[in-house]
Image 1 (cartoon, helix red, strand yellow):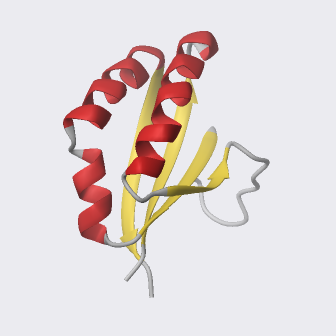
Image 2 (cartoon, rainbow, N blue to C red; image 1 turned 180 degrees about the vertical axis):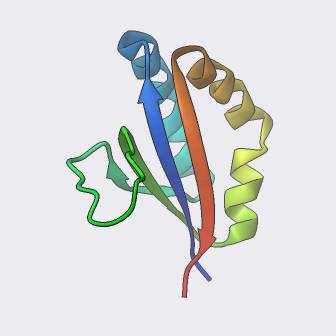
Length: 95
């Protein structure tokens, strides 16, 4: 069953964040993930959530998503992301 990873990212250093994005895309794809949304326009329709930049990934399963997130490759990239942004991340199983 597919799983989705939702990132809400607040970027402090766009140049450094672009370094992260350049490396993250091939790592994501090699792990079986794909981008469904990446920083496009968004609107809050209800509630008080005010996301900055929304990124949505799809993985073949929850296990594959967690395997990628906790992998040495992504954790190294996450260190770059953490230098230049603040992220909130949710993993949800599809139907």
